[in-house]
Length: 106
Image 1 (cartoon, rainbow, N blue to C red):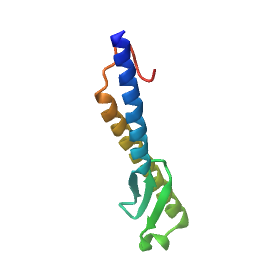
Image 2: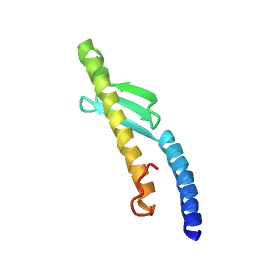
Image 3: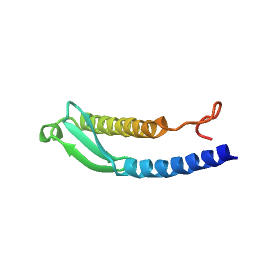
């Protein structure tokens, strides 16, 4: 029975750590770029766009190109959020000792 009690404590600690990690991820901000930094999009870990920055030189350019640069910067920001989120969750799971054969998620 001590083994089950220990597993329950680990599960509770894991849940607390996951909640903390999710809160941290939600507060983080990343910046995606395109066009060599001509367009930048700042996004939270919750995928909310906070800011869009466009170099003045690009504004007078072709509208279609500007739209493509904005879309590319948003996609870059999404990839960066996902990468940082995965890294944070990986750090969290690295200390977890699951019994043989048990996999996450449960």
